[in-house]
Image 1 (cartoon, rainbow, N blue to C red):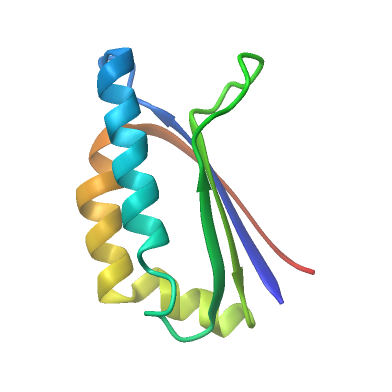
Image 2 (image 1 turned 60 degrees about the horizontal axis):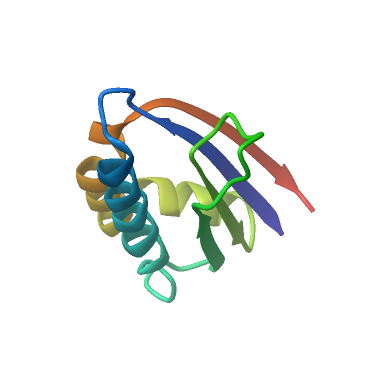
Length: 100
């Protein structure tokens, strides 16, 4: 199994209310991909970090193998969510992919 973990920081220009809506949209969009992409085993987005956090949200996803992760990365439904709900609102992205 391959894990795909992403941490994002939202852009500073957004108010706390806007950030809450953005995080909810990212969560809804990414978690809606469950069952739609071959090899995607599990996908969860966490949005309620503790005050000690320096990231605003985290994606925790699991795939059958590295090829399934590549499929996900280029899948039209994933690309649509990334382009509409994630990329325009984030300033940083940190990724860790690993076999478990």
